[in-house]
Length: 382
Image 1: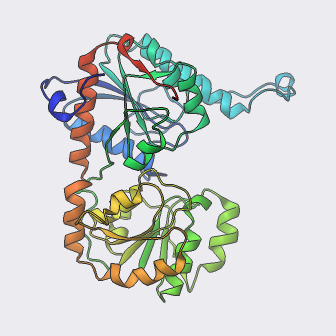
Image 2: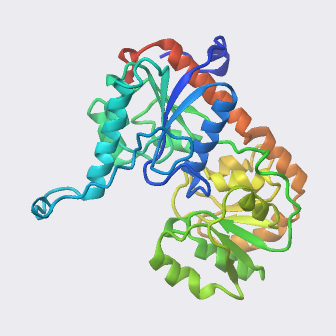
Image 3: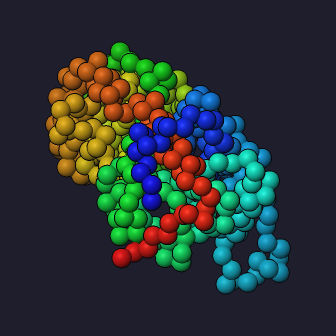
């Protein structure tokens, strides 16, 4: 494989046509449902701002996307075929065929247009069939190893190059992908502007069990602080059981906000609490909060410590032991005392979207310069 460093890739300044495969579960559109959608939207905007032509293939409703979508259409099995209990669920089949349609369009409709594919899909088909495309693919690892993706690699799936969103995620994938360049996510400092802070705390993201906002409510209450919650309630049962009973005196749910409205809410918080009970591959909300100058208190799960950089001089918050509500409550006071301008400066130094886009541009240029998919490498577990 070639050297994919920015220095090696920066020798060619020509405009690229980049096919970006996004997520298929939720649209890449404001208000973003999660960090993956936010990442893809920001990267697409950044590459286009640098003069590249970007063809976005993502879920229906995505902003600035191609007409081919990854989330499938309205097909439903008829009465006779739906009676077969051995078949996969209809949603699986729709998503499966949607990916096949997009990959077929890349081989035909877009075959003479595209220089390189950037695969951010969590589906197995882009890896399984990347060697059939007439141009190279760069795959970014956004999650821990999943059976869909590792089975695709084991069956001969390939990618010209791999990147990972954190060192933690790269280590998780080492037995399957020995060489993945770590490119941390970045956020737009013009959107996530320095805020004035305030007296109350904030938690934002998808309101689901693995993000555990109920632990943020408990930590805020233990610290004697009110917590504002922002985000889509994607698990109604969890919301009803773990969140709704605490709304009122302890916490306020502001709904699902996006764009500058969300950025203003983050910038007016005294601190942001991040409470995953799973290993976060990166921790996008921590980066977004830091860019607003808002300190973060986060459980030490996955790649979050890389975002907060607690051992590398510049800090944007405090990492506490995983699931330790008392430790989080105790860290809230010291976090809110941090200098907001220093937090913003630290975020600008290593979490800027400009840096992220420049590094991805270098990787994509290097892959495009290497040529068609016949040169792609296959990686399997050792």
